[in-house]
Amino acid sequence: MLGGWLSVGGNLSHLNARDNVKTLNAGSRQTNLTYGTRLLNLPYLYAGTDMALTWPNIDRRGGKLSLTYDNLYQHSFPLYAENLGSKDSKEMVPEQFAHNLTAAYNFAGGRFSLAVECRNLTNAKLYDNYSLQKPGRAFFATVRVAFGQDRAARHKSHQP
Image (cartoon, rainbow, N blue to C red; front, side):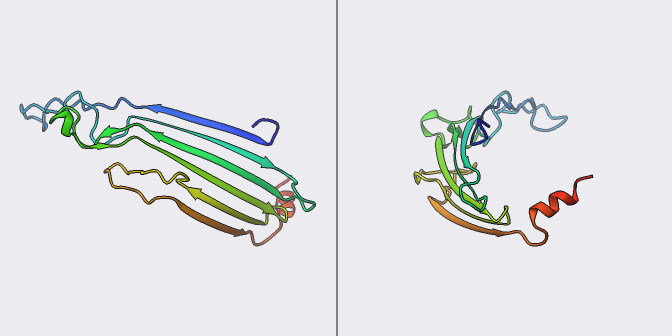
């Protein structure tokens, strides 16, 4: 967090999960045709970043506004065994890049919260691990009300 108002994060993952079973069944001598290849239907390269801007005390009542952007990149990967069949006709889960945007406003000491979110902002074609297309752009709104003691009273009750 930079100066209490900016937060930036990210990740990068590269998996090298391989099929290390030499035979089809225990005690069998039949060779496993996928031995040494990447595991089936498993993404092996993906990354994500996020950035949040926060404005505490944006109004006289101590309201807090935050804007968050995040994204996810996933490299294409084969749906089935990478070493079987023709490379030209191989079914692939395509490369994907998703963008999301969220705005949230907390007020009344954090007792109330309003948030709006846009998932898949650019309406990109996104797929799950079985190459089934996910829904396109979607909008969500959330209203949260915290019942019970107010935050200040809860905080004081946990103090020694």
